[in-house]
Structure formats: C-alpha cells, structure tokens
Image (cartoon, rainbow, N blue to C red; front, side, top):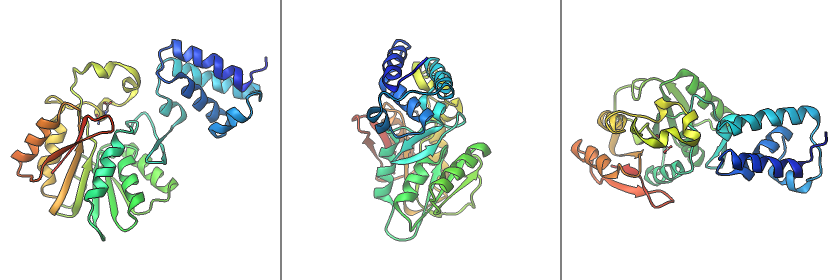
Length: 278
Ligand code: GLN
C-alpha cells in the first residue's frame, strides 16, 4: 500500500491528536523526518514521496510509542537545546526551553577571562555545554550521579566538539577537590514535590524520578547544593539554581540564611519565577 508523506502527516496528526498529544502535527513531522533522515523542509517540498515498506514499518513502530505517550525526544534520542543538538536517553531529564533562561543568566555572571564553571546534576550536559559553547576561554565541569549519564554528556561534548568541558560522576560536589575554585555554579536540580500532580501527566511520566523529585517540598537538593557550594565558590562567585515557579521565596530564604548576599529571583519567558541566585 502506498504511503505518501502528505497522507501520513494528515492521518497520523489526527491519531496523535486523539491520543492527547499537545503538538500532533509537529510530532508526526518530527517522526517522519527521523525515519527519512531528512530535514523538516523535505516534507513540504516532496509531499507526494512514498515511504518504502521498511520506512513505513519503522514509522509505524515509532508512532505507536508516541501514541502510548512516550516523549518524542526519547523516541528519536535527540533534543535541541540552545541550538545544540543533544543525545538524550531515558536515564536523563529532557532539556527544557525554560532552562535556557538559567544559561542566559549564568553567562551574565561569568567574569571576563579564564575561570571555571560548575554544573551540578548535568544530565545530558545541556547547561554545561551551552555555557562552554559560548565561552571558549573557560572550563566547564558537569557532575552527575550516574556513570551512564556522565558517559552520555561526554558523548554529547565530543559530538559537538566542545572541548572546554569535562564530566565527572558522583554525588553533587563529591568528585571535586574541596577548595574554592568556581566563579559560577549552576544547577537544574530535582525540585518537584513527590505529591505534585504534574508528575502523572504527559512526558514527565517517562523521565527519571531521581532527576525530578526531591524531599522537603522539593527543596532538599537545593538546600544541599546551596550549603556545600560555599566551600567551592570563589569570593564574588555566584550560585544560580532553577526551581519551581512557587519556590522563589523559599529558595531566597535558604540562600540568605546560609549567608549568600545579593540574593534575587528571575523569571522565565512565561513570566514565572524560575531561577534564584546569590
Ligand atoms: N521544570 C521541570 C518540570 O516541571 C522539572 C525540572 C526539574 O525538576 N529540575 O517538569
């Protein structure tokens, strides 16, 4: 049976819409491009092109996974962040556009000249690599608990040829020598409360809980990072952390009680509290 691009886009968008996807057209286009190994423009330049049987079988299998709710990024194994194409796996959180705000703010705080930046809970390496790609003169270290995640971040750095980055495995600061060495520490740690209903909807159901959920109303890891960070930050260094839109006041209190100064919260592109620094 012939399967033209145009027909498949139409049919599968309707199927994905019925299955509850919030971006059915985009999802079917991304899956088709992945199967055909072509850019998005190809679909609209060659709408009459037919998929062969192998391509169609592959497309059907991927579509079934998306209909079952699996995030597109895990299905195609890739996600764009800060215009870097990153490999992702189900052992990592999928980088989100909101987190680009953290990168932007961190770049403003990194002083001129040679220095070091630390990214805690680096996952795919998204934040570390985005920062390193903008500042060839600095060294960015990313740390993640899981060795397989560190391997993925390292692979991303190699694919993108971002050589001023390195990735270490361990719990928070544990792989580091205990001395002030970083001008900026950034983190998008787990910060969602276990009881948050957001955890049982959409893509987030497929992501590792360890990257999302923290005890103490979601603040436990933010507390550890803030407390221990003081030993690793240079004088005049900055700590910047992403958090939930209702956690700004609580995170500011944590930082102030630990002696951080110039503590403030910034909003994401949706106008919601997203990053607190000090
Ligand atoms: N912002 C993400 C979400 O709401 C969570 C990211 C995180 O826990 N670090 O799904």
